[in-house]
Length: 64
Image (cartoon, rainbow, N blue to C red; front, side):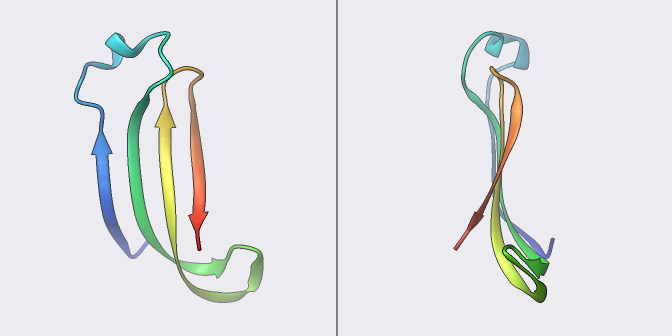
């Protein structure tokens, strides 16, 4: 990671989100390393990472 471009966190308490399909945390990052889909090439790209409450899980998306 070379930079945090943006970040957001849900303003409520985590326990208030139980059973709700809401976004808890979100980051937009600038990353340097092997390029997605072209691992033999190195470069920089933007990656979006988010954490959702229900169902719980992380989502990672590479932006073009």
